[in-house]
Length: 72
Image (spheres, rainbow, N blue to C red):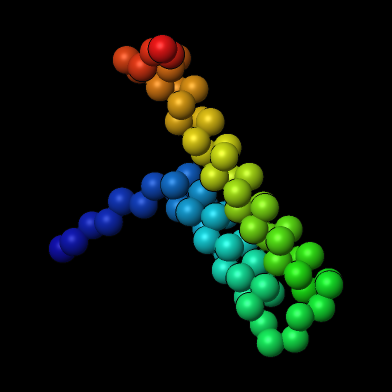
């Protein structure tokens, strides 16, 4: 029998990046370009960039605090 371990936090972070990117690109690449659809697409892409930035900040700060990393 095969068992699969699911890291819930990792899964939530991946979904919180993937879904806004997909929605943002869907709004930006649709055939009818309106100002509202372009604005919504950019907002979705910025939301996913915010999540990516938060994850990078979290990894770096944890590495500096508890790991072997050091600032130059």
